[in-house]
Image (cartoon, rainbow, N blue to C red; front, side, top):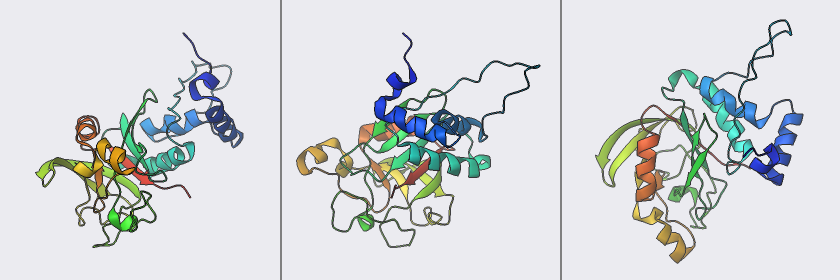
Length: 230
């Protein structure tokens, strides 16, 4: 069965796509660059026709504005990314009771969604919302920006994965031991009991089940982006 773009995205998302197109770039064009770090090729003259490049429609669960930021950061760090078929995007605009850690397949636009905890220093009142980022040692806060996933290791929370910050706002990630790991306070049962997840010390803390998928699909050498929309 063939669906229209409006059916695939929904009326609201389709409207957002139209708004993006009005600025000269469709959401599909934003995402197409994830695979090669380049803008879509300009059409060739009529004398040398070519087949249209396939368009990728990203699951609208990811806010298009955050997707655009992630794409720009991907482009800026393209030479440091070994694997481009899958990327991770974390939307810290959302409450911790919402799924906000996304694994995006850049070839199909399909997304898998997961819960993830933020740092206690980013949410001192434990409201369930990230209030601020910090790159400072001892802040126990989450940091925004682009990361590259690193090696696996066995630590306090079992099998985990290191990350390296690629920007001035998160370049202390390795020194601060910011990693991707599982934690009891990031399990869905915590949300059912308390209405929110617990807090990490700045790490990307996931449920045990979610971590297994992240380690399997978003292993070393992948791009990870975290940010919050104003």
